[in-house]
Amino acid sequence: GPQGTLFGRNSVGGNLDIFTNKPKPTFGGSGSIQYGNYDWTVAAGALNLPVTDTLATRVAFQHFSHTGFYANGTDDDLQNSVRAEALWKPTGNDQVLITADDERLGGKSQSVSNITADHLSPGGAATAPTSNVVYPGNPWNNNALYGDADLYRTDEANWGLMLQYDHAFRPAT
Image 1 (cartoon, one colour):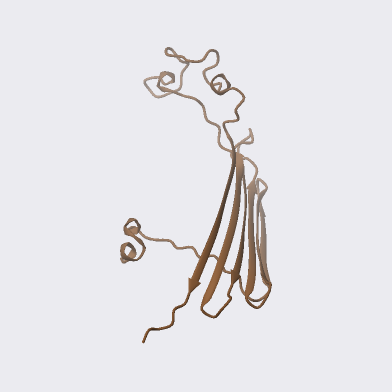
Image 2: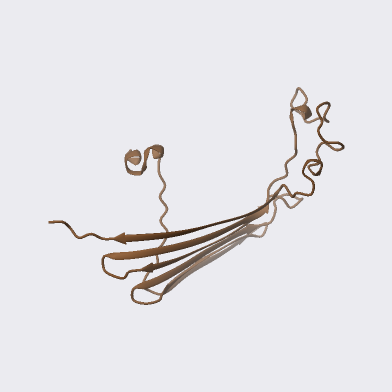
């Protein structure tokens, strides 16, 4: 297909373009809420708010969460994101779009253990270490290597800011 020509050489296997809704000069909004087992919760919404005849804003958000699937509480998830946009059209040929977004990710991943080649028997089953032990005591205890660090906790924050200027040129004669 034409993906490589249109979108660059690394898109030969296909391309996925995602376009968000832009602010509109009319008031409006939408929202949804979903709930399921393991306290699975999704809430999403958007609000379109015109400020003047030439300036419009839009705010969109999404919340996703669920409790852990395992008895020890791991494999839970928490995601919150918000995007705010302002579109200014000072003339019929010019427009300026400012976009800011923020995303927060959290939760505890699935449990893992520090298993090295020294902990595997020839059949591949985990065994007690026999040599090259760099930590004393229980070989499955992560605290021996990492102290009080919570190795399974995810707390991540991502944000972005974009400024886009578009000008529509008249046809040349």
